[in-house]
Length: 196
Image 1 (cartoon, one colour):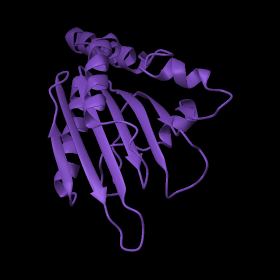
Image 2: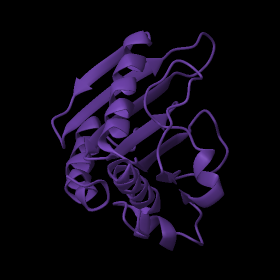
Image 3: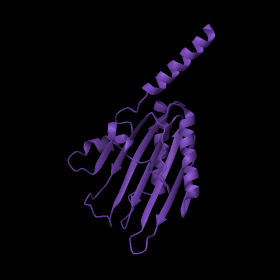
Image 4: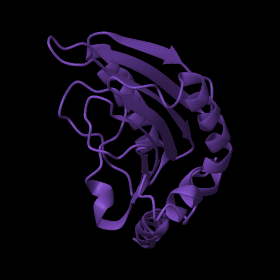
């Protein structure tokens, strides 16, 4: 009986430690820059209640949502912010922290599965962190402008970082190579929150 109580106590304390972890302020690569952009309003930081409203910005073809994290932060950059949908171009950075490695592994696996179901997706292999994936997709619509979406996601321990850009009839803000470089930089930092 005592052994069962001891094991239950250890499991409860591990769960409490996992739940108490969070992403420190200014942890993301572009977060300081985003928080300083108060006047121009080109950068946005989603956290607190807003963090659950943002999507996971990987290539997706369904309404199914990726979830399961214990903390997340999202940065979003729009250079023009003029409301012109035709020339819209944006990019962002997201970090997701899970209670354990299996949750982060599942997120990367789901990204692979979703891209396999999407039409016209180019999967771009990545080598950063413990696992990584990238992709691009162009959607052409009759009588409308095309939309190009690119992303790179990296996992290190129980954390996943994602770098993305989305544009319509506008110049790309980032390349897959630049997303890959950001993923490499962030992979080294993710050990601080996700363990390694």
